Image (tube, rainbow, N blue to C red):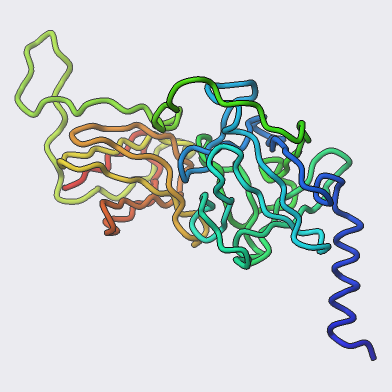
Length: 287
């Protein structure tokens, strides 16, 4: 009977044989999604979906592939800030310890061009773009999802140089339209209507007369004097950061019906909200 150690070596060799060439030697790559045609990009500690092309900083969408021995597994380190893609929170970018399995990934080929990226520490968690179009999602997937298929295109060994000048600060995702809160006093007739007064609680979604929409608008209103962080939580996975609503502002975000959103301020979790079927829903903090 083979020992567990021998079986482990056989599995490692099998993974190595399946691994593309860019896994076997450290390479700089761009990672393109099959469904949305976007690239994985670094924005601070947030994994953004970024459009193809040079963009504001070409380093933001470039990644070092760091093989883990001869296992066929690898880490993905940002050429912009040196942080690693880690599955513990979202996914997100962290300064991962060398042995952290949550920052180790496996490539599962789908065809000759695309494959899936599965986390080695949380084997149910794949990188995908199924739900939120502004950030990279992580969690369980369906076999046919093109949103969970990625093409890793090898670049030159030396990443492109950063443009001159300071890097711009992270901006809100393109899908979240941030604007100041409307004034509480009644406006003049030529002005937009004021924001409705806060409700005691968010009303439960009512069944529409027609078929429920697949996507609704969520209006996140921050009536406090501190930034409000918004996270998305899919299928019971860890919450993943989505965007920040500045003080006394509101942001409109499209969401699939049934998706769970969580609010946080500082180091404290606040309310959780599940998107209902109403075309537009308001989430206000504080209520």
